Image 1 (tube, rainbow, N blue to C red):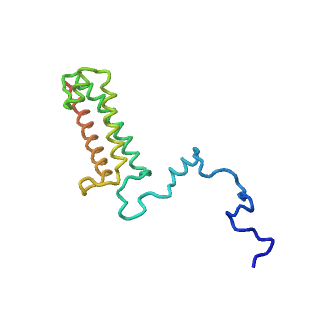
Image 2 (cartoon, rainbow, N blue to C red):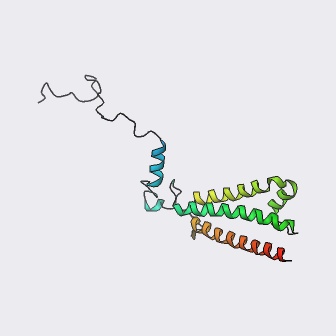
Length: 165
C-alpha cells in the first residue's frame, strides 16, 4: 500500500524533477586540470579486452615522449652536420632532401623536420601495434633512434676528420 507521503513514481508528471546535488559544477567539463590529471593518471591504458591490446589508444607510455624528443633533436643535429659536410664537398644521399637542398635551400631544415616529425607521430600513434605480426612499432622507434644516433656519430666523425685535413 502506498501512503500519502510517498513520492509517486518518476515519469508520471505529478511531481517536478528536483536536483539534489550539493555541488552544481559539471564534472564532465574539460579544464586544464582534468587534462593534466587524465594525462598523468589515465584510467585505461589499453583496450578493454585482450584482443584490443594492440589497438591505438590515447595514452602512451612516457618513454615514447623521450624517444620522440630524442629523435627530433637528432634530426636537428643531423641537419646541421649535413650542411657542414656539404660545405666541404659531401653530397646528400636522400633524393628528396637533395632536391630540396638544391632547389630551395632555405626549406631544407623545415622539410627535414616535417618528414621526421610525421614519421615519429605515426610511430607513436601505432606504438602498440605490431608490424608484420612480429615487432611492435615502439621497438621500431627505439631501433630508429639508435640508427639515427649512429648516423649522427658517423657524421660528427666525418666533420672532425674533414677539419683535420
